[in-house]
Image 1 (cartoon, protein in one colour):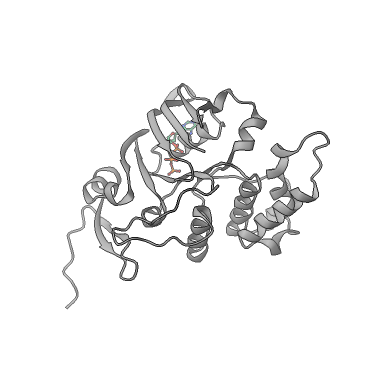
Image 2 (cartoon, helix red, strand yellow):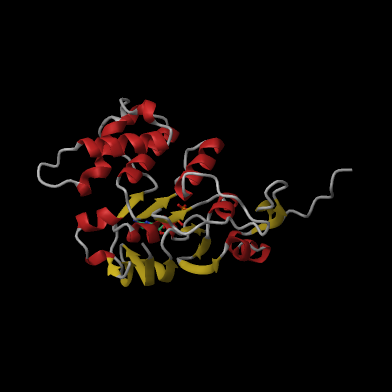
Length: 281
Ligand SMILES: Nc1ncnc2c1ncn2[C@@H]1O[C@H](COP(=O)(O)OP(=O)(O)OP(=O)(O)O)[C@@H](O)[C@H]1O
């Protein structure tokens, strides 16, 4: 399912935080939002997953206006993992994941055997089947994050909106979760650094905020750089993550290198005001 965001502006408490964003994602594409703290990524995503209404502009899914749909219609198409998601009540992990099935249930709202199977499969896919009976509030940050990703997968969405999905995860889990979000496997990287990706094959279209620019470079098909609530650059990671852009938007000195095995683009960072250090003798 394609997403088309057109001239979208978002206001919170009378202040315009996101200005005139136009962004398109073809079906099955993985689109990354990157940008400094406070640049407006979460505010933009909150509007895309309907926690906020647009002040202007539209979000369309295969041409249908998302904000004109009922909550149930929207939730059947789009699942979200907000930045500080969770619950104040001590549901078990399995119960939290089961909430992802609610948009698909009619009448009594009882989970069917098929719903239960979808939930179990989602927990297994994120390596959290063993957490099913545990109270959510007693889980570690990384365990909670995996359960919440399983809840989003259990919703069987056509569009996934993720705000920092690798928050709280150790490095192995970060790599695993991003591979899972892509398509359940680690993508091969081309010599140019851009991962190759077959046509969508039913995978959801993903819009995700990421802080780790190296993860974004390797896993995303396209990046949108957000600065001061506006798009500063967009395109394939290799074209977007230039030293000039990174200096201007993030205030860092970046060096582009190749991964010694895959050839993928990797970035090394220094503070802008740090003079280049001589190589070790
Ligand atoms: N409810 C709110 N009331 C007032 N200001 C807000 C509110 N929500 C966000 N802001 C402000 O809007 C700006 C953008 O915030 P947002 O959370 O969208 O940025 P972000 O790019 O997601 O940041 P981070 O990378 O730190 O998560 C910030 O200056 C923030 O303080």
